[in-house]
Image: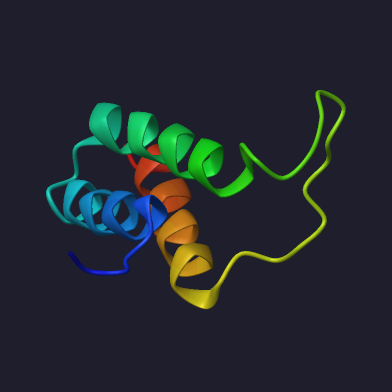
Length: 70
């Protein structure tokens, strides 16, 4: 078994959904990615204060461009 995190797998799927210009699936994957990155980080009132890794920032930027396209 590899030592990849769930967020790594979701990021890979998100990048592929963006490549295929599948807005609906990409949106679900963004939500799953955000959940996987923050779910065990604090209580109900937790606010994310760390930066996402560059690969995730890039994917989120590309997702926003796709979402606003056409």
